[in-house]
Image (cartoon, rainbow, N blue to C red; front, side):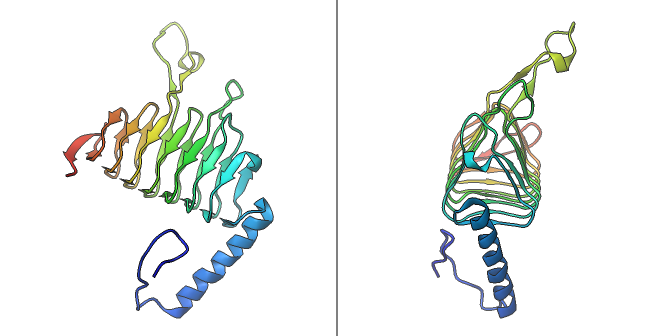
Length: 217
């Protein structure tokens, strides 16, 4: 069937009606909550916090699951494309310190990320279209400078190169993305990887630090 989720799939005949009803009921409550909060067709779970939500651009059928915090205080507009989903208990931090107004987050169409995600978006995070990600993903788009041994590390400032993920990427659970990393299109990132560096299209990467494991033909 063609569902209103941007995906084409066939419902498993074994799915019981009571489960279908429960999902439909919960989605209806989330939609009502989102409309009352934003005036748009946004599905919001319970206890979702949208800070400065006027600076957040919602595409069609965006889902923000329960107990998630989105910080819209950013120098650039937060953009969530069509059919984006952010899992429960996640947090977007755009401005982490008064000394610097953060850049924020952009997520492309049909991209989704699991529960307990941390978006450290002070330096900017860009995620392309059709990116699917597991739970416990973390993004750290700033890095502390520590080259001057005469000063405390916390007094030496930070770099903010940002993080960029291309299109059609599968990211396993518990992956960490560090400031300055770039992941190409059509890529798989193995669970538990620490990604720091620039990676081409059509590869599988993994490890600590992440390296190219093989090419995708």
